[in-house]
Image (cartoon, rainbow, N blue to C red; front, side):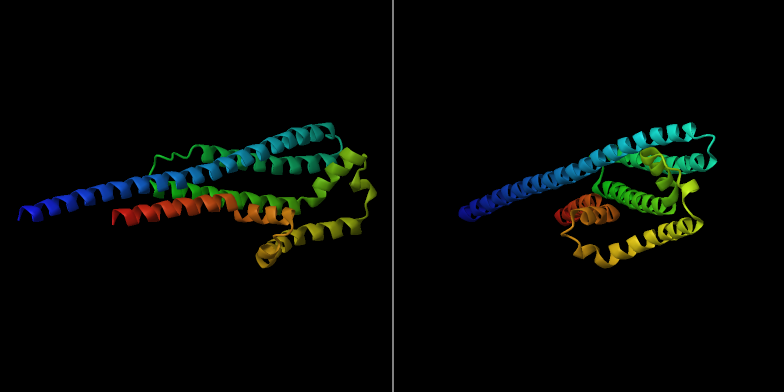
Length: 225
């Protein structure tokens, strides 16, 4: 009888040791995955900060261009339109960067999942609205660039048919880009530029972080069951 009691005690001790070992392994695994998610989000915040800095330079330059061409209504309006777009991109990027840096990793996994999903949606919307505005404002941007680089006012040198053709091209460019990204995005891995564009449209870094956090929540659910 004593031997049976001793054996039962040993089993209980081994069970406790095994449970403790499993708990430690779960914590280590969760910490490793959380570190990966932090790394991806931190990288995205850095990218957003660099892009925001570039757009800030663009905002300042376009503001100066608009002021310098105040008497030329066509160039002034073109500079102002491009500047409004640049300000919108700047605000969206700063917002995304701040929200990313404000994520509190001590919060429950589900809370962080919602935060990351919000960031992912914000990134996709920013990219798509940027592409849409760029397509619609194709002629104003071209007018600004032509004036700054070549000193040519396209509104005075170009014909009406040229304007109509470029306006139609701008209107067709955005839906064409969306169609190409959906139909051929997975087949363009050999082109670094196109691959980077597809990643931006899909928000790959944030999507990967979302997957990490989802796996953490799933692991936590299994471990508590």
